[in-house]
Length: 208
Image (cartoon, rainbow, N blue to C red; front, top):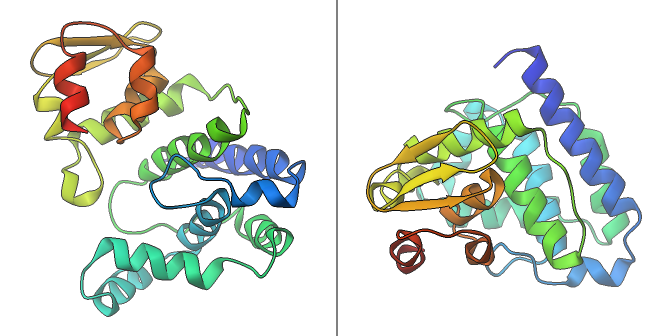
């Protein structure tokens, strides 16, 4: 991942910070699209992830007994401030970092787009993401096993075809729609299914 791609990640972090700056404190407690997490929790997770190095990831995963959910929960607990403004300040402090866990660095794009929508959609906020970032995120999710947070097994049930980008992946009955809802759907966000059609939608819905 080159400097241009890190620029996309940093720009997306900055855009999310701008949206959160205009948010009343009570709205931080609203449920996000990420199961069991509030908007505040997702923001804290993004701080934790931005601070994570390859070595730190391995150490923390071992401490969590190799349970990704426990590791993420501990990161949220660690980085969630006593107030939304404290967490927002922590997000500002890490916005330009380039540290990353093991694995493809494009996972930072997946994180910023998917978690960006986890926060924005319940709050009625919209964002026009760089198409390159969403396409690359979709391709990475489609080839990453579920054990590592991806959807490789899921896209074995349906062929995803973007109607607004030159990308398709997977096998089985076709699911058509804009690339962002495709990415969100295979990332487990059922709200995106309303924006998709095709004979494979039912099979995809049953699997998430």
